[in-house]
Length: 316
Length: 320
Image (cartoon, rainbow over all chains, first blue to last red):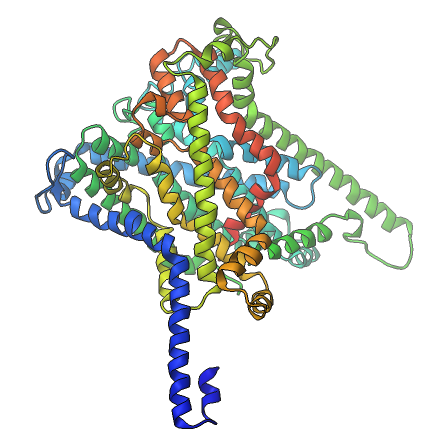
C-alpha cells in the first residue's frame, strides 16, 4: 500500500516510505512469530529435537545409564537378519491390519447405508453405534475383553448355552488370540461409520433419481453411484485406519499382561518397541525399531496417495 | 469446507431425503385409481423396507452393546454369579463391589480419579490456549515463512508418537520430571497436538475478515483481536478441542505407563491395569465396578456433548 502511493512523491519521501514499509513488515513478522512462540518451542523441544535424537540413537547402543555408544548400522542389521521377534511383531501387526481394516470399513459402510436416507431414529442408532469407538481404547474395555474371551468367559458360556459346543480359551490359545484384538477393533466401527454418513449425505440425490428412472436396481446403484461418489471418503477412512492400526497398543498390552503372549501371538509392533525400550532398556535398538515403523507408515501413506488417483475420483 | 458448510449440507439432505409419495408418480392428471394404487404399493414397500432395516439395526445395536451392559450388570453381582449369569439385568443394586473395589488397592481410587482429573484438566487448558494462539497466527497473521511453517505443522500430524517417545523420555528424565505429571501436561501448553491446530485454522478462516478490519480501525492490536473477537466467535471449535482433549487424555494409557512409577501418582487406567495384575482373576466384580466408574465420565461427556462430538468426528473426516 505504502509503496504504490510513493510514486507520486519525491524520491526522498519514497525512500522514507520504503523504510517505513520495511519497518512495518518487520513489526508484522515479529508479531506473527510472537504468537507462534509456544508452537515453535514445542516443535523444537518435543518434535524436531526428539526425532533427530531418535535417528542418532538408532545407530547406538544405549541403556540410559551409560552414554550412547556408536555402533553404526548394527541395530538395523541385527533387526533384519538375527531378530525373529522383530519379524514376528511385523507378522502380527500386518495380520491384524489385513483383517481389521477391511472388516471395520465394511461394517462401517454397511451400517451407514442402512442408516442413510431418512430412517426414523437414525441419529439414535448412530449415537449408540458410536459408543464403542468412544470407549474402546480404554483399559477398562481391554479388561472386559479378557473376561469375555477367556476359556470360561462370557462368549463360551453363550456358545455353550446356544449350541452346546465348548469353545477354546480364545486368549490363551496362540492361534486365536489375535482375533480377539481384531474383534475389538472391528467393534469400534463407529467413527468411520460417522465419516461415511457424512460422505453419503454429499452424494447428489438427483443421481439416484436418474438411476431409478433407468430402473437400476439397488446393487447397481451402489456400485455405479454410491461407491464411486464416496471413494474419497473410503480412501480417507482407509488411510486413517491403517495409520491407527499400526499404533495399536493398549488392548494388546492389557490382554497379554504386557508380554505379547501367548508365545508372542499378540506381540504387535508397538508393544515390542515398548518392551525393548522400557522393559529391557535397549533404547538404541528401540529407536531403530521406531524409525523402521516411521518408514513403514510413511511408505504406506505415500503408496496410498500415489495409487489413489487410479481409483479415487475427486469432483472438484 | 467449514463446520458451518457441513451443517447446511446436513439440513439440505434431510429436506431432500424421504417423502415416498413423491417417488414415481406416473401422471399429474389427477388422482386416478392406477396412480393411487402405485402410491399405496410404494408406501407399503417402503414400510416393509424400513421395518427390515429397523430389525437389522436393533439386532446389531444389541450385539454391540451387550458386552457393555453385561459389564455394568456384573458390577452389581456377587463374584459367584459373574461366571454363570449372562443376563444384563443386575437383579439387585448391591453396591458392595463398588465399596470394596474403591479401596482394594494400596491407594484408594480417590487418588487415581484426582490424578486423572488434574492431568485431564491441565491438558484441556493447555491444548485450547496454545493451539488457538498458534491457529490464530496461521489463519490470520501475515509474516514471512508462514506457508513453510504451516506445512511443517501439517507434517507433524503424520508423525507416529513412537519416534519421539524415547528421546522425550531421556529429556524428561534429565529434567527430573519422570514420575510427575509434567511430561504429560507441559508439552500440551506448547501446541504439540497439530490436529487441533488444523481444526482451528479451518474454523478461524471462516470468520469474516471485516470484523478484524473494523477492530483494527478501532485501534485493536492482534492480541486483542484474538482475545475479544476470534475466541468468542469460536466457541464450537474450542469446545470440540476441549472435549476431545479430555476424552483422549482420560483414556491415555501409554503416556502414564511410561512416565508414572509411584502408585500414588497413577491415573485411573494405570490403576485398572495394576488391579488386573494384583488380584489376578479373582475379583472380577470389583474390577468391573471400577471399570464402570472409569468409563462413566466419558459416557457422561458423550451424553452432554453428543452433537459436538459426532460433528467433530464427521468434520475431521470431511477435510480435504
